[in-house]
Image 1 (cartoon, rainbow, N blue to C red):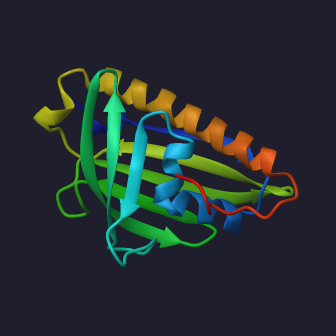
Image 2: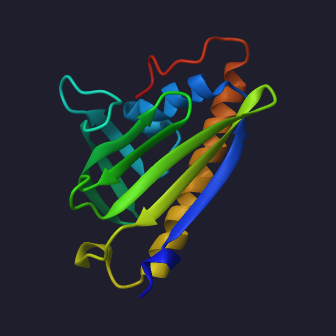
Length: 161
């Protein structure tokens, strides 16, 4: 199978500046607030949104649940944030966020790219890609709605779990 088919990008407009959106998406502990599939995500002790940092998270797809380890591979405040599930050297999937200003807000793009096949992914890789694309759409929608609900309050992830 051609791995170039196993990628997607989805986007949404978010009513916040790119720097604010970056703070939200790079604070991996907040992803459970928006993602339908990830929870209990946290950087390793002493780590944060910088290239090389590791974090763990609880994932679910249907009735399957597992914990994954990911490594940050791109951290450009206000512009881009990316991580590789399984680590930069031998990872399976790359998730990335690209941010660009548009009007008073930000176009947030979330991308997913399969880096290599692995038995843990199962055999229906097109179905997996489509499932993850729907998850990304849900995440982006929830993020944009959450930011809109904040109104004029400062945008922060404090208190999110």
